[in-house]
Length: 356
Image (cartoon, rainbow, N blue to C red):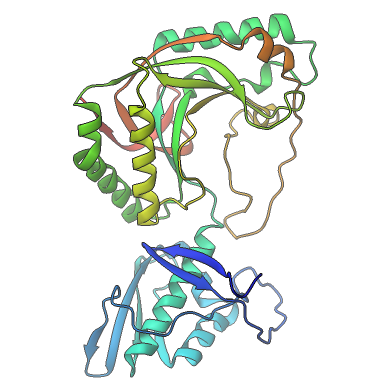
């Protein structure tokens, strides 16, 4: 890493430099809960934090889901001890399984702020290693679209089943066709409620103005592939565009994404949403319930690898380049829960907003 161009981390709308430092490290029997990365952060007071003066000194609270407490505590409490020693503070963390605030107390305001900043960096680091739990999406559940998708599947298997890797196992479930806006890691009921409130704010502040209180009329037509080799395809998707040729749908999803990224609920990876509806995915080959996007980490932060067998999509792209899947009336954005379905076979939803 170039010390003059350190990694930047965005947390709660603020940007921190993650500076490389040399420090002594120790071997642990099991380091999954112990953070040995750089912990050097800005020491100057940060007005964004609420620090209260008490009879004992100063105090600041941090709200975090209980699932992440262990990463602040560390193996045998080593991470918390390190934080407390370096910032001259005392850090109180609720017991595992109990939701509540992490409370930082200390004699010096700067020390409390430093501890709070470091805890935010730890929470941000380990949150990024959590598997996605939810996603913002439009459901594409119009009867015409689902029927046309089944027609697409039938014709592809009829004309291209001899192509390498093409078979019925890699097609999307028609009841789960959707447009993803962004992936979420929601680790508590409070975070789910925060997401619902954020989505409602988006509706009031700009969605109503873009939609004029009516469904967005769009079309699902044409196919494209994700990678750069049509002979080695993992994901094939249908394209979605507005009927009137405007960019209102793209503007809407981009602004929703930007709002959720600035709040920290969605990690910033892209500046805009790639509007697509997955119709074929090689993840389905071994697991019909698999999903197109996933983290490469388990809930314990361990790296995982998913082997995929690609397919030759050249004939499919040639024969079905402009396949028409049908008209859409996009009227709702859903907060959908991964790996969970409702009574209709669609993704279960824990919140939504409607345009009309």
